[in-house]
Length: 142
Image (tube, rainbow, N blue to C red):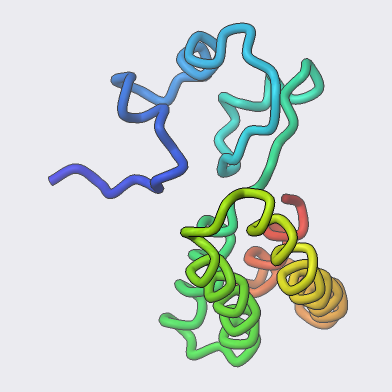
């Protein structure tokens, strides 16, 4: 059985490997904002008209795995913040784009800002190399 893929990650559906050349071919001359994970194949396009937008599902997975494996209280807190953002997205999914954007600015932005500040504060408290540090670093870099 094939490994499940993130709904945002479409490259694997059109190639036989994850070689960077496939990402470059797939994207061609396209420029814009690209929602993606930390796949190095996309990195060549960053700065050449492609802006990396981190995938919250990939960041969430790091905290989910940490919470499942270790019952991490910090991971549970991160999942709570992310859950609030997901709830807003679920509630607005059928609205027109301009209404979704307005609600994101009004409701999601304060939560995302609070999550970011929370991550920065907790990153200083956890040891380098720990699972919590890795989850925080992944999210903070994106």
